[in-house]
Structure formats: structure tokens, C-alpha cells
Image (tube, rainbow, N blue to C red; front, side):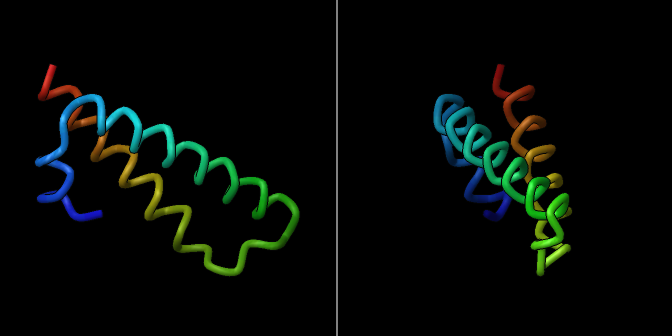
Length: 61
């Protein structure tokens, strides 16, 4: 999701999105551990988006 779209969301929406991202990160980590991860760049994308959401949550509070 783009930063512009994230900035428009409320703090509650960002928290919900963060929960989804953490679930996705866990899934990708399990795929990597079992050797089933085909798109290795997805882990990096999710990690960076988590950081973006955390930054926005910090500025909104």
C-alpha cells in the first residue's frame, strides 16, 4: 500500500492493517523455513511496510 493511502487511514485502521501485515510476515517466515518461499522480495516489502505503519502510528498519537 502506498504511503499516501496509509496517511489517510485512522489510527484504528492502521492498527488493523499492522495486524494483517504481521500475520503475512509470519506466513512468509514459515514458508522460508520450509523452503517454499518463491518470492523472497515479499519478506522485505512486508518488513518495510510494517515500519511505515509503525512510524505513522507514532506520529498520530
